[in-house]
Length: 222
Image (cartoon, one colour):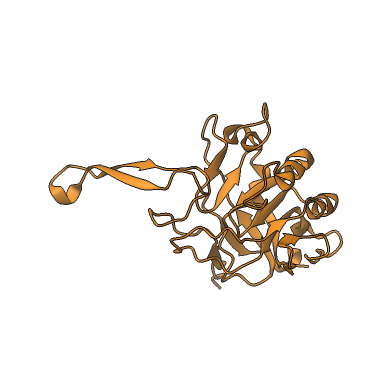
């Protein structure tokens, strides 16, 4: 009997010149150096743009001087059991510790928490500055529950107007990896395996990821 392949959920929005980027950051563009359709032996392209585009992993060096760049971060947080949870977004726009459900006690999926806040349109042409961000108190709560990674479907874990970036700093202080810009529209809440490895970009403050979820074995979906 053939075991069916697990369903994969691609939670990375498409990246193109239309992909919104943080105000003041560099949009993505493609420079074609040679083209098979034009008679060249190969097609070659050069990628220009911010590393904080689409689904991406922030390095600690993005916020705190003297900390690890993305090539030096541990990879373990980006692979393993996770849980997708829909936040109850308050009027203030900051998602607090009571706005996200707790994972079951001793559940391995508590290690990686992906928080759905809005239905992100990966093809949107405009940056939405009204996204909901994380209260550092929520980061602290998830850290005490064993989280090693927090992911969001928004451009940042902090509001667009924030200058001191307290949610980023809380994650870094607790050793929690950060994923931003995920597309969780078509993924039901529940338990999955996360695979979202950053590129080994030496000295960089972030890296795009191809973030994928697949169903966990029933024994781990508690």
